[in-house]
Length: 350
Length: 263
Image (cartoon, rainbow over the protein chains, first blue to last red):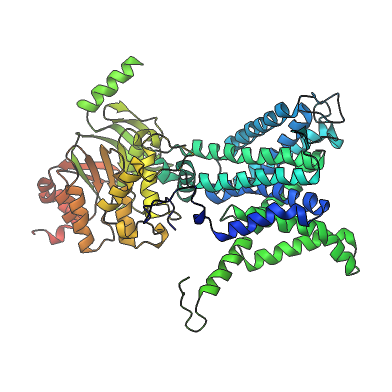
């Protein structure tokens, strides 16, 4: 597990495509040709939604996995971006919306979300463990009640609707296929950004803070500043996901950032696995599949469809019961067992 | 501003490496350090002796800023650092090792040392991965080599042996350009061979690097130090050259356990 690349036998260049593992090619091809083999519903309500939730969970995975900071505020950060897109841009509530073009509204919305997430982080980083969870949960709950009770800016209970993804370069990005590719590009960018940054000096230092904050201070690092910066970076990912989320749903309301969705993000990240940036996306696809089809499964068994939450809960319980480090942990253990010689129990090469 | 720069410049030249004036530290009713005043010249090697609970590690924690002294001032190379957070003191050339290794167990040996090098240089927040010919990465490689850990360079620290972790602990303190290092019982739990290696490393440090070492093993302490401070119940009990301290009857009574005298 060489983390900083070391001298290889021959000079390896970053554009050398043969270094890319074969799984990436397979997954990449599947994701690229998906629109040709699946319908609009699957593209929008399964894959686009899963990638957006995956990005928000990825922002949590970055904080929790590399920084040991379990933040429940990530959904709220995304929600702030979603609200800002509706407020700066256009929605059905034209007394509130400024009507600015999307290329002003969307970047500004992400910026506001980053500021909000960084400030939340600044409040949370002086605490550890369960207290970080409590503070971020309190911020999330406070924000939920603020948007529900404030009508002048957030339009209270009903929120802001008819928020449309823009038409740009002659493409209607609201249509299922363009929107699928739009989310795919951003999800892939976010994934590789996290993979890359985790090995940068900043990412390494964050992992150092996770392992031993006191020693990091004794090596010359400003631990608090590193933690807050980590919140800023993760808020950038969550903010971009929030813009995509409001374009997907066409609306944003207090329900988007309620405590329930905030906890769903934590569940997705934990079920997927916090050890690697791919985990949140695995968790998100499972979550979306359960959300979408649990109802049908229940009805097929003659049970009340309104109990679909029960099936979701059971599904997650089963995974966490068998693998405390989520789907990633299941996969890792399967690979280790496959590599072991069945007779001697010794690890085999290859 | 100009004044600070001037005082900093003069500080590097002539001022004492470390100067404590009336430093005390209370934990509730417990007085862990009481009115400690001491001066360490630049490049001086000092041993701190004393029984358990004498306040040696508390003294180190106050010097690095892990916690603030209740009263008193701490000057580092002439500069008053009493109110500075630990990282500011480290960036001024102070280093320390810990009695119980504080390492980054989820990272490799090289990453640990690389972090130590990065901590005292610019670009701590850099999002750009280091290139293979990165100067800091190179100095990290050199440091790993200097403490004989090259064979386990890419091993996760959690999987190192105890002795290797102690060596890594020292490597972290040598990163960058240290001017004054605090070693907290570096020899504890080491084998006789590892102890000899440790003594070699300490005595082989460049002359301008001073250090202060807490050590229970008198053989190690007296061999690597030019001056000894004896602590007892949070106070400085005696200070002097190793031989004086060793032969002082009061010290023998208190610390060496009078009974075995005469060696």
